[in-house]
Length: 162
View 1 (cartoon, rainbow, N blue to C red):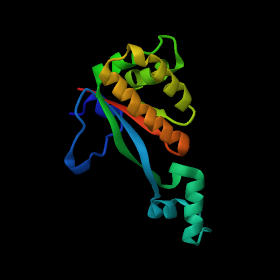
View 2: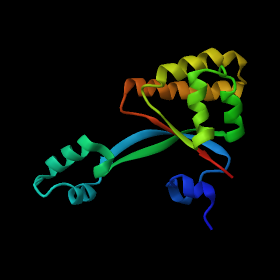
View 3: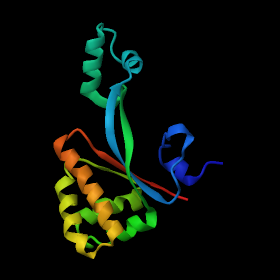
View 4: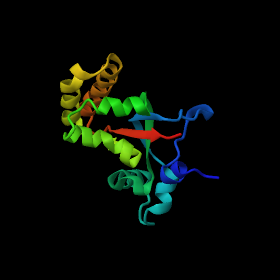
């Protein structure tokens, strides 16, 4: 029987049969992209004769034609710890609302439009955080800096329930 969580969220393709632990929040970063050329060729018009044209067209319109994102786990924390961590952010802040989306929706995306907002909020809330929460903040701020350096990069944050 399939659990509600399996029905609601896409399955994670784990490495070597390793499934993510339950009751965790995992931050994934974009590590690479590639074009599934077979998929792109099937979906493109018959007029596209050169592989270069197919690849260019695929990249131009994104995932609809077989552009696949490869995500790599960068930060993990227990779900309860994550909730306590974001509770350190000001209650009515946009940063807290963004990160609370993991609890509400099961997954969020963090891109270049969120980097300053989140980095400043985490930095400002650091004095009320535990040492562990400060460590998570430092790791997330480092990931946000990577997004600043490469705006095509993004983070996918996903909750895994029991």
